[in-house]
Amino acid sequence: MLTSAVSVTSNRPTALLALLQDKKALLLTGPAGIGKTHLLRTIAATFEGQRRLAPLLSASPLSKTIPLGVFLGAPGSIPEDRLSPGALIDFFTRQRSQAILLIDNVDQLDETSLFVVSRLIGTSGLPAVITVRDLNSVPHEITGLYDSGDLRHVVVEGLTDADVDELATHMIGGPLTPTPAPAFAPSPMGIHCT
Image (cartoon, rainbow, N blue to C red; front, side, top):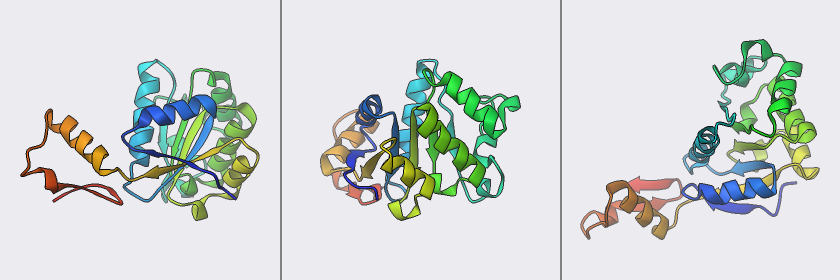
């Protein structure tokens, strides 16, 4: 199954963007709160800043009960007349040089959305970043994309002490004094402020 992953942290979106240049589709894994959604938001903002199409679609247990549910939650970025499997595939395929597909919680996609996503990645070559908490939750269609070489596995890891210091310094606009510095402690789930 999925092996030989590379790793990134949530405060290094440029590393992820560089991986996208090399491999058009990425599967991010990591526990809840580690920064997968933050990375997707950063990629979306980067693409939108370049006036490119970058809908961030978040699947959920509710959207999983509705055919094409994840796409219905993207008002404004996808024309309403494009909300059928064939029309979505056509729309994104025509936009593939200026678009990226960002799917949070790929394990929560309904069957129709999963069909569309797997076709867009495997057949049209649309750049994509999709997330899931762990590899045991990856739908069979996504595993097939990895096995065929259409998808690269990227592990999102927790921040190191140096990363936390850098982030805290950036957030407050200057160096930490000795008193608050220990309050910012890295944890397996990201930054924990005491």
